[in-house]
Image (cartoon, rainbow, N blue to C red; front, side, top):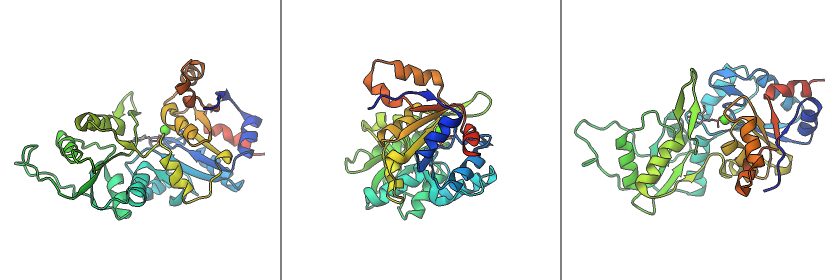
Length: 304
Ligand code: PLP
Ligand code: CA
């Protein structure tokens, strides 16, 4: 990849950068909110960008909510002008992949929560019914569904050994697709806690099946292609803003976009500089072009 600078920018430099872009792609958690706490100034920034004729997209690896619930969350946190069509989640894009790319003819076995189930349902992709097993059902006698053509793994707070066992049985069939919503290892919670991410569940299933999942979410290009199939996007005039170097910034690099790290989330400036200063060429795509403390810093650049 190209040499990226990791330039800390502010004020007029932010204004010049935004002036040169038409499409702003925001990661959500760690960029515009942290859990239920909005990043100060983020709603005003989105409104101002739109008033200045920019197109704004939200690109999240969080598969727990269907699109309509994101609209509610945006509104709850004070965003007044975010539409469902602007929200691209790993659950929505996984459903689009199964329907439009894989054109899967059969059922999908899902490890995942409501967001994934609902997006598949909305896309008309049939799933194996998620009924809790009777007490006498075990890994030795569960009924194998004959028509499972894909396994999709995402964040699942009800992940069990039983689900893992079923999924790896379906994956014995080499014609059964193996997809993961996203590769995220973990996510910060409040009070010093973290939660394991979809990537940790996918890793368990990769080991159990001796297969590798196709990843739909960032850093895979597919989420960008999903947006580009619905909106006319010029990569040169698009900016990806994220808080995690290994997903968001690599995603931007994979899609040929300029990238910006914001320091309100997971990754630090020191980590970005370590990637920049590393000898390994494959680390270069983790280096953002630009760094800001917070997207709240856009406010003074956008107002005049
Ligand atoms: N997946 C889950 C389950 C999460 O809780 C989060 C963040 O809270 C994410 C993914 C990452 O979301 P994003 O890509 O918006 O940072
Ligand atoms: Ca994030």
